Amino acid sequence: MTQLHKVIGDLALLVVCTDSCKGLENAVKHIFPNAEQRECFRHLMENFIKRYSGGEHMFPAARAYKKEVFEQHMSTVLSSNPDVFQWIKNWHSLKWMRCAFNPVIKCDYVTNNVDESSNNWIRDIKDLLVIELANKLREMIMVLWHKRRRIGERLIRKILPVVLHVLKARTRGLDHLSVVKGDNYVVEVWDNSNCHAKHVVKAYLHECSCEEWQHTGKPC
Image 1 (spheres, rainbow, N blue to C red):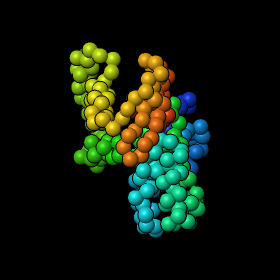
Image 2 (image 1 turned 90 degrees about the horizontal axis):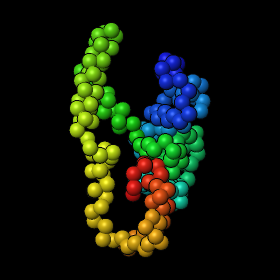
Image 3 (image 1 turned 90 degrees about the vertical axis):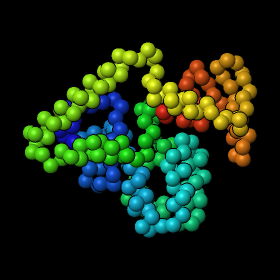
């Protein structure tokens, strides 16, 4: 953490997500006292299922953007396992639920899977000597950046293709929704399925009352 601090300094907005390692948690707290400390939910659940049942409500609780939805799922968990609250407080006190994340940071990951992908990328070179490892990493990153530059040179829109793909996917299968317009930028969206939810969308503010847009930066 000290070496990382030398590289990136004190950032105004920083998230560090760890994997239930108390030593690492304390190091982050000491070196980056202003960082938002999160915990990988996958590691939390590995510990949870060793002790308790009824974990099916933990997943929607962690993924919920609204605090009310999180509390609803957690109340179900606590009704079956009353001591879960104290266990989480003692051993998993970092932020692992989306509703507690800072929406300004625009990162809603609840697991460290992206880091596991990075580990998989370099798995064949991990055993190299330090100097050889650093040189090989430099070479791999050069190749990756060159590939991304070539892709970037062909882009003609301001929105990345992967984001457009997500947005197009979200426009399908919306027959269960109905829209009441206030004007061209403010609408009320009704979910006519079993949940009968209602959300207010303010497009000019990039906000929805479901709070997903605020956390991801992408329209929900």
